[in-house]
Structures are given as structure tokens and as C-alpha cells.
Image (cartoon, rainbow, N blue to C red; front, side, top):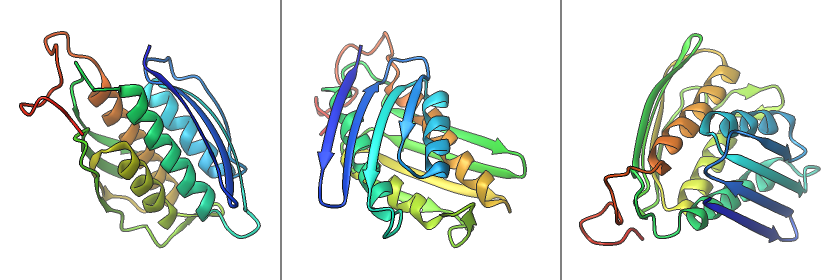
Amino acid sequence: MRISEIARKTSETNILIKLNIDGTGKSAIETGIGFFDHMLTLFTAHGLFNLELEATGDLHVDFHHTVEDVGLCLGVAFKDALGDKSGIKRYGFISLPMDETLVNVSLDISGRPHLTLVNPLEDRIAGDFPLDLLRVFFQALTDRGGITAHATVMTGSNPHHAAEALFKGLARALREAVSKDPRVQDVPSTKGSID
């Protein structure tokens, strides 16, 4: 099993993550931000990852620190659990519909972090969750995970649907990228390493 456990404590947040990449989609998530918990639960279920996540943060200030630090920790957890990345498919992509919303996500576990996120609804709010925090989360995750990711909301008018499709799309693309290809014995790079 490819598993990791990450703890991070600062003056702003206290986070503990236990991740099993080869799971069944089980989750126990508590960040204090209901909408974010919902998105992370969807992410876990669609990625078939097992995730235990406890986060406390300075929510009296705003959601930013908690969302960002969870992304940082989750990125580190994926990177640690993947080890040298031997045998993985490396690339993942999906075009995912969510009612009126269509999202495209493509990623490469390249060791070279990059995020291109196009979300026309970024200035909207879903419940009490500002959608500009999606960029904060995805940037933190891709930076620490060493992932190149391109995600685009192609169509959509409902901010909840846009956020949900992005999280599901990220999960499905990651699920594909981290899966093992029995024909790949070593690291999937002609350089001999991914870092």
C-alpha cells in the first residue's frame, strides 16, 4: 500500500493527514469548513483514496490559511506516498460534466509544479465559500505534490457545480495518473527519475 502521514502545526493551523492512495474512497474529514469538507469528501470518493484529515485553523480570520495549508499537506502526502513513482501511469485527464457545468482536467506527475486554472466563476461564492480559494488549494497541492495541472471550467453558471466538477475532475485525473501500469517497471521518464 502507498500510504503517508503528514502533520503540520503553525500559529495559523494544525493539520494531520493520513492518506492511502490505494484505498476504496473512505474518508473522515473535519476542517471546520463545511463546503470544503464536502469537496474533499467528493475528491476522496472519486479518487478512490482513503483520507483521514483533521484540521483546525484561524477561521475567525477567514478560510484562507486552512484551505491553503490543507492543500500543502495533501500535496506532500501524495508525493511521499508515491515514493520514486516507479510503475505509475504519470498522466491523467478527464472531461467531466456536472449538470450544466463541464470541466476539463489534465495533469502530469512530473516533479515540476505548475497550475493553470481557468474558472469564470472564480469571483462567486458557494454557500459561504469564496471560489477564489479553489485556486489557493489547487496551487498549494500542485506546488507541494510536484504536479503539473491544467483545469478549465468550459461551461457553467452554478458556483457549487463548478467547484464540485473541479474537485471530481482532479480526483479522477489523479486516480488515473497514480495508478500502476504493469508494463512500466521503472520510473515513467526517459531521464530515469521524476523530481
